[in-house]
Picture 1: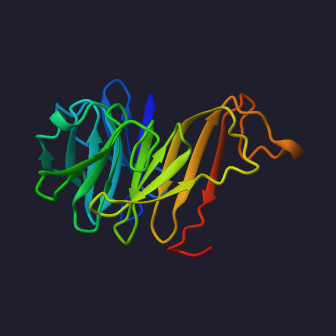
Picture 2 (picture 1 turned 180 degrees about the horizontal axis):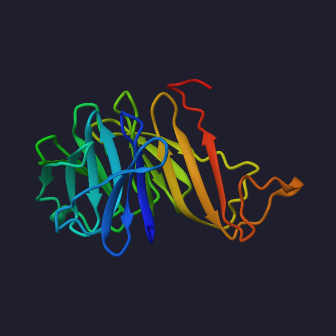
Length: 236
């Protein structure tokens, strides 16, 4: 049984891949029926798998402990270890893989995005603390859509910023929170891209909205909601 699950992804064959901790770091692959297919053998340096991203048959694992990215096959074989990233990272929290196999990492403490080439070289960085365009307060997640556009979600501002594949600022989207009980502290703010951009919000200690609609809130006040964003590129 996991002590904590930090990330989950769906493999091309429908298997679920879960990353987290039991007593040590662990990645477990489940069959579509929920039974265990295998537990992966992890390299000793991988101590805190914090996020997963799947591109084709390659699983990218972001490790907050070593501040590195590991590439595995979908059956758990280690393919590559991207070293040389630690000097650019302090507290990495999420990654996403682009159509060209480059990938981006968002760092909460440094409040910036790091883009890495397919070979593992640092391509560029952008961001910094602030409220201006291209700046962040508490970046929590990052996603790339099918057109290669990059989206970064911010816990503090409750907004998503859009960037080009080269990190050029494009737009800001305020989370459509009307009717949602999120006046409490938002503890996680997750994105899922594709043909549509979804926001998943998890808020603690949030009061129920007028009319009693609780949008998945527990009796302890934890709330969750999945919201379809109205994105100009996708219409309504």
